[in-house]
Length: 66
Image 1: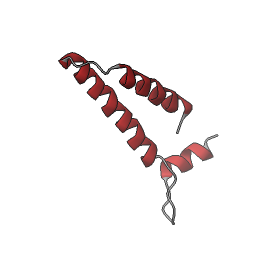
Image 2: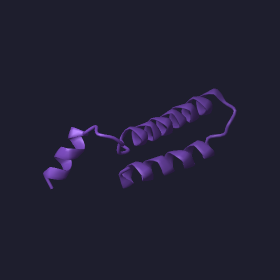
Image 3: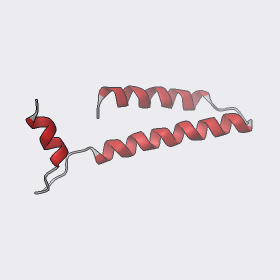
C-alpha cells in the first residue's frame, strides 16, 4: 500500500475515535469516516500480489515503464 493511503487511513482512524458524540450529525460523520477506512482497507487487499500463475498487467506495466 502506498504511504499516502496509510497516512490517510491513520488520520481517518484518529478522526473516528474523536467522533464519539451521541448527536445524529456526529454519528453520521463517524459512519462516513468508518466506511472510508473500510474502503481503503478493501483497496489494500485488492492491490496485494496474487499467488499462482495469474499476471497482473497493471503491475507489469508499472514495473516495465520505470
